[in-house]
Length: 323
Image 1 (cartoon, rainbow, N blue to C red):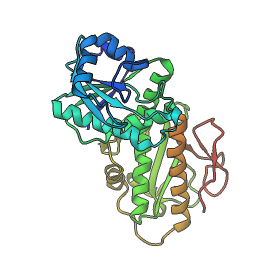
Image 2: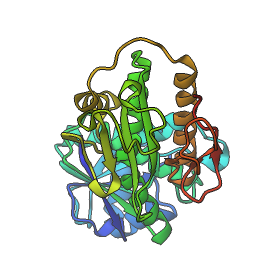
Image 3: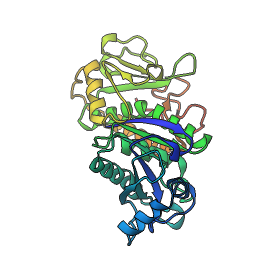
Image 4: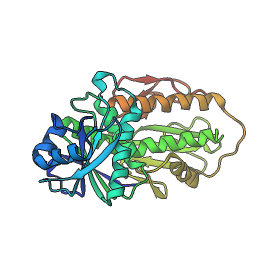
């Protein structure tokens, strides 16, 4: 699982083993990143693509050439889906990143620079393009050590930074979903903002560890040592481990259990579990659309009344959990 680094600027000037080119199916020159790569790489780049891949390349596939006049050793050409022309299957976008990493592994490339595939002239919605890039690269089984996401322009760069920043909280929530799916329905959580308003935080414990009327964020539990508390001020440190974009939900779940202990299987709380499933699904969908939608409890503390909000100040409401 490679480290992901956000960069802003011209991908053709990136000094890495391989640069990924957002190519078209003919592997000819064009506009956007593709045009810039061919212009900087020189005529030898186009000559190689025509000689080696005379029939072009399918959407979601990848192939390589040498890098011509570029500072990299190789160019990995991949064809992302054209959202504007109706190619809206996210699996094709995922495939572009995966196949590029597979080609990088075959070449022995350890540092790779990616553009945000399909987010330019192909019109893929920016935040979903970024979320797809981060999740696919971070969870890939690859020998690539460093993956640079090179954004062109301030808006795209901010979107990449936001996606990387929200990855740890999102994985913690996905780890909690994993535990509910395993039947640990006694788990309870309280998300919100810290007193400064600068950092999102979450407290996770078991229902049996809460005192009656204990307000969010579970300030007076029976046993504080069995409460997992995380704040974005902690960056990627969660409990006794680290959670990044490359952490699987199962790994995040293990860190939660390491802190709170294994909950009793009884009694079950199917209404609460169903509510959480709907919440996390909406969080994931909204995050892909807007970049960030971390849940914040309602004004009354959030349990038993008052809607929650997805993204502080967004106005995007979600029902509070059942009692």
